[in-house]
Image (cartoon, rainbow, N blue to C red; front, side):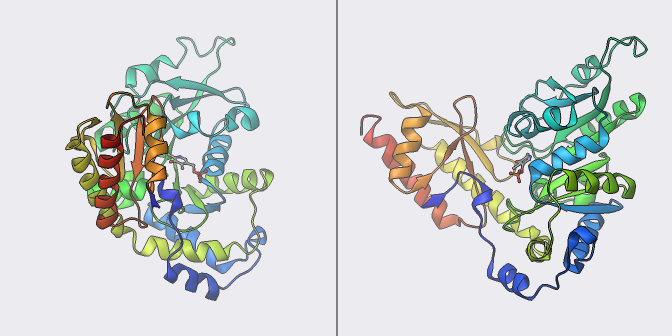
Length: 348
Ligand SMILES: *Cc1c(COP(=O)(O)O)cnc(C)c1O
């Protein structure tokens, strides 16, 4: 199977498995797992923040971050296309008692500044209004096609947040993809956010885990929420060991970006597929099947029967994600499957 549904399907590398087998371990709920500590320090340092905290998942990393920033009854400004709003089961609303204020993402992944401003009541003293406490951005923006947020835009959001005295949280599940695509150190991409979460378990291809980074004070708060949510893990150095290896060779994500572009260009040559190769910025390719008779479902089912796994990602679009588990030959094979499926027709 050529697996393009997600970069979460990546398996730990032999080097990760070796590191896991040799990791020094302790009880991380006591703060005594040396490998977790090393990973937390390394993550914080790479992103230019004071401290870090290993989390079981990106979902919990976002949830604990929001709960640490945002008081109950406050508003958290999130994109309508954000993972936090769409895919995290309303966690911050359920567990944190916050009100999500959905702001429609532009196709470039940004939340228009005017719409963010509109989330603030004219009279903050008027007790009937919930007050914004946090803006959440996502970089790369998954549902907008793995697009990159510009530095300029993030600086403007930072200025707005400072003006209003609220925080900025960055869902950087794929921030290392963004760093590699922009040729900049990850810390540059984190500079405008108070806190960042990123996934070790996606393109970085560790088996499990996400990191939250931010100020030492903030991370202390996150640790408390993590424990409350049941995310305190004992000998978590097993996972951290893989994470440390992942962070050593994140530059290889460039290959995934090359493969995504190769895929998009190949798809663009196929009649019955609509795709814009110029829109591909990282490891995600969004496309539509426009051949007569096809729905995304018919296409995805037929492709799966021929050994190619692709997922729908909202609004009837298909998403292909490249990662360590697929090379350029797999991309060419995937293109062959797509051509064959279209040629056989929707009734096949
Ligand atoms: C995958 C993802 C998450 C959630 O991570 P999990 O580890 O799957 O819970 C959060 N945000 C974005 C943008 C993601 O792509």
